[in-house]
Amino acid sequence: MSDKFMIYGATGYTGKLVARTAKALGMNPILAARNEARLKSIAGQHGFDYRAFDLSDTKALDDALSLVDVVLHIAGPFSQTSKPMVDACLRTGTHYLDITGEIDVFEACAARDAAAKDAGITIMPGVGFDVVPSDCLAAHMKARMPDAVELALSISGLGHMSRGTAKTGVESIGAGTRVRRDGQIVSLKVPPRADVDFGHGPRPSIALGWGDVSTAFHSTGIPRITVYFESSPELEQMAALGGFKRWIASLGFMQRRLKAQVDKMPEGPTDVERRAGQGVLVGEAINAAGERVVSRLVCPEGYTLTAMTSLEIVRRTLAGDVRPGFQTPSLAFGADFITDFDGCVRQDMNA
Image 1 (cartoon, rainbow, N blue to C red):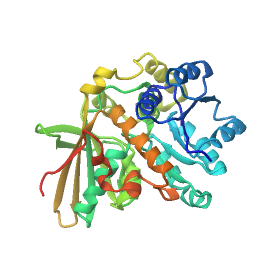
Image 2: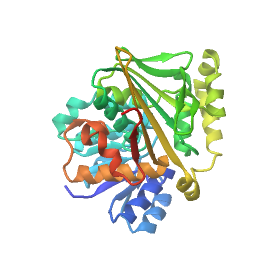
Image 3: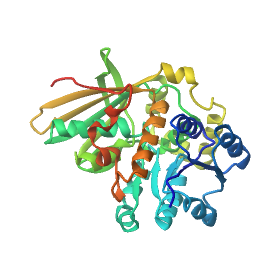
Image 4: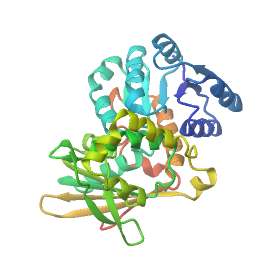
């Protein structure tokens, strides 16, 4: 085994940003993706080695993973790509990291806990903005209120989406609003709403099925979890879709049409937009007596933070600072992990 790692999905928006950041940090990944021409160009810009292969090519996949200790999997939608990569990591003894925000992918990875322990590898999905800051905030809320029975996580400032993130949203249209109730993931026809103070007074916010519906439960054991986003015209339009329209939008031909529209979008935010952006997260924990604690976390723009957190987790994984099995970021590194990054500031609002 070497001390190298692989970035699979290096030709996408986030993959290119992570590769560029890795170069700036003096890291030396092997870049990988399906499209060899695009991959060769990106690898050449940074002086990195590369391997072009499709995840359906089991031999090529296993051969590539045999060259590294860790794979940072960035090629979504992870509903389609996570399982073949996890399967290969279990076969080859390669640590698996990804940047998914998809609830079902988190749950599928959690179900591989025993297999990962047997293989001696870590399986840690969600090492980017999905879900490092929110997962660390969830763990912090649990530490502040150990007897919490309810957790609300609210997020503002996502700004422009990459095409990959948008396509993941398209895939989730038919699922309704997913939340955690009595420890179980359920889908609500009508999304809950809340007014959340992100730092400039209460703002209308609407619940979405974000990855923390899965991961925050694994990290904290809190049985009732809802994730809110500051409302926007796009979110309101989505919330207004009735069950029949959601069903129609989930059908194959509509999914293809919607994803074709996504392909017409800009690839992702520009460097200027990323530098100007900022994420704000609010955590609220409530116990059975109705007592509550609130904390706020300010952090860099989401894609910028994804490059920072994912590569730091790669570094720690290469150094052996992880345990075998399924892990969330806060289970692996603690609630304060997020505060190690420049621009990440956490404040307890009612300490």
